[in-house]
Length: 319
Image (tube, rainbow, N blue to C red; front, top):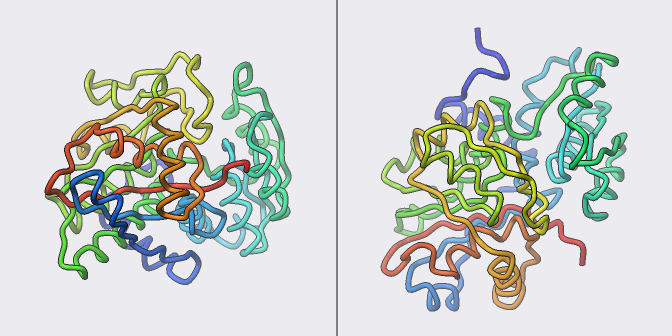
């Protein structure tokens, strides 16, 4: 029996793309002469900052909600999120006339908190250093009968996130290009896992790399050790969207199978990438959304003569 906690397959990403078409923006593939010049490669940017709600998260949230029965939607949705997934669930729920409760850290950027509330969701705050958001979410689920849709460890969420890689690969092919590398941010691993499944279906030769903030490189370390490593939660909080404690139970086996490795970037490298995006791409990118670009600009990967996909995953930064 297939459940929300059954690992997804590449075909699930293809199905998700058909399901969410018309509900989300098909973001463009961007090229930039300066980016090619400084990297020495052909760089293909996937700007999910242009997605509704300002991040890729709407893809997974929409896919998951569309897979629910009308009765489940009527009972409501609950999730826990640093901000972007919560906002995406709130948006998707509003479009389907479902009530949503979002458990968010008290220190989440105001732009994320306010945007989530604007969709009509109920917000429950918690202290990310001392309280367990998952326990709070499960308690609300038990009390209300709502369906819990976590930010990454969910079959339909992972599949939905991977649809952006399908689009990028298709746009690259239309331009006469094929992706040598794809770099994408990693927190719990749902985005990079979904992208890995997508490219396994349509571009299996592409090497895929997770990018994480320094001090929060649990996915990279886990790929090396072969087991799920944990962060000590003491690192910089600049990249608030990527502060997972450990890779997901569903996402890590996917990433262990398909990823070529991982990179970590410093706060200064992230800020430099944000500045580059604003100056040359004319895009506002939040810190966590800029880590893949940061890795490229910092020379973490040799892009010379290669075609490299870069995911700018979100743009919900306090100005």
